[in-house]
Image 1 (cartoon, rainbow, N blue to C red):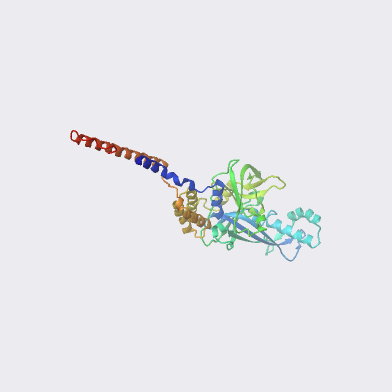
Image 2: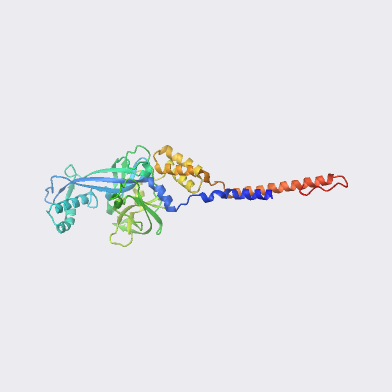
Length: 401
């Protein structure tokens, strides 16, 4: 009876911690991967407007501030966002925003009616010039990048001034590559090796404009789930249709598959639709931007460790998770998501799930049974030996000897 009970205990042992494994959806894990790498991008525009006749509309400049999103593509400060967020050349970027602002001010001052301003808009796009401080130069722009609280660990991180290395306008790809001087390595996202198949589940991340109205949008990004539908082309450039909801402030934010790999960036939506109907840049467009500018597209060692830590955590291997998160924090000490998951893993030490192979446990249990059988056989042999050595007429041994 005791041997049988021991065998049951040995075989059942490894299963006792399985119920303590934290529940997780694939979307939740993807969001955990993405959160530290999403950034908030602001652009301050200033420009003077020159009319068709060469005269300035006003001797004072017009100002517009915009907000977008983006993601870190390399630990040394390369950031990808939407091209139209930093475009200083076309009406889809800063030029168009400043012209709209000028017409709005003319309406407010009573110099134009709203109807007149709307009728004038397309003519202004085509024929008016928007200049910066230097005559004939593009409008002035100042771009700042903020890290998410999930990366910086503080409610509002210090802005990092960004320079534009390359951009494609809305109609020619809608991607841009920025460079910031980060004081420490930044958590990055990897770009998927190829475009997603139709029906692939995705998550879009960014800072929607509606959030900006009620709270500081630099605190935490929002996540919108959906799936890919089809690939469409604009001027021969591919864009991927997705059902994930998006709003203007999310432009440039990453859309990822459930492995946390970037499949595109939020670009534009189609108005007047009852269901979410948005487009992201194609995976190939993002990858080409990085390759063209010599930006590595493979994960750093710290970012690989972060993903390994999340995998261990959700598998219930908390000690292994802590070891991986420690690797991350040695390189990225302010990586708040790694800090949070490390703390949770330590709290879950009592619920540790064994990392030993189930087949090894089967072998261990079988070995225990063999050992017990050997003990029983040995006991029987000893019993028989004692029986043979008993003198004639001796009483039989008591039961159980």
